[in-house]
Length: 109
View 1 (cartoon, rainbow, N blue to C red):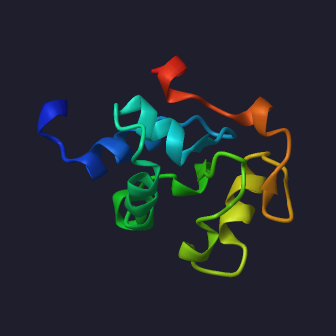
View 2 (view 1 turned 90 degrees about the horizontal axis):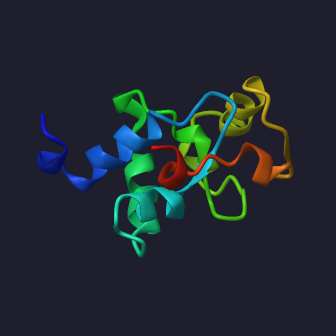
View 3 (view 1 turned 135 degrees about the vertical axis):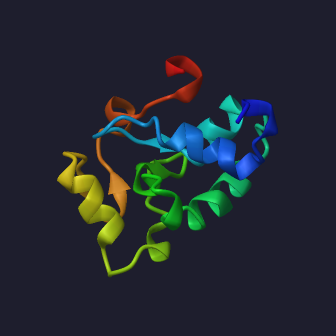
């Protein structure tokens, strides 16, 4: 399937699937990469529906490194546990050393 025939959510999923293990990106960074800079919230909606799509949604956080999507994961702290299992340090729902683990699709894809 050609990239231009994918809907927005599918494009979001394709970017999210490329986030490296142990790295994170933001809803806004994905939106900017897709040429829809004002659509960070739509990226969030896509992440909410990504469970059946085998997308590492736990690697997508808000622009400040907060786990704002954590309530969409099963279990109390699953998003944090998944990140920590990849070596990402999280304290009080905030990714530590955010600038060091941040992956920018506009620079890396």
